[in-house]
Image 1 (cartoon, rainbow, N blue to C red):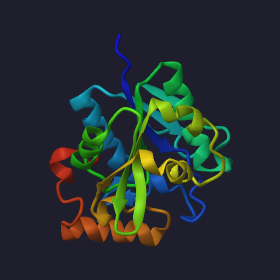
Image 2 (tube, rainbow, N blue to C red):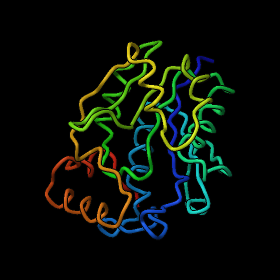
Image 3 (cartoon, rainbow, N blue to C red):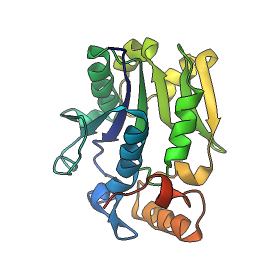
Length: 211
């Protein structure tokens, strides 16, 4: 069987800045976690990706219909610990590439994730780029799995991207789609963006929350 492309949904954060479990906070009446999860489910439906979820204590009871769910016991180390778990699982199954999507980015669309998938080339790293710089989602060729396994702390994959600038492919994405929710104020801003119809205006037809 040809190696598959994997997608990892990272949901093991500790919500320190939010003050309560942020993934269960409501965004327009829908739990935050369902927004990017629904988008990934639609991507799996369209492209046959193997969908992996990495969860922590706060997300351990979420009804995730992933192909595989991993519990991150080292989540206090930061995002790198979740990346390592996802990469180790993908490497064991000889995945050809791994897409990383964060659970606290509710406004990302299937259309944008498909642009990232289409941009990929063997031996390259694809990153989203807003006006503020590079950001998840990120798409890594399997050649970078060993480096990803060595990441530490909360810097995620950005440090790796800086080390391999010549391998980068950047996909321009509207800043609003790259909005991540770390605080209650961030959640309020996400609701305003949705109300304005900006950035994530197509969520209703190409992904977004499932009910």
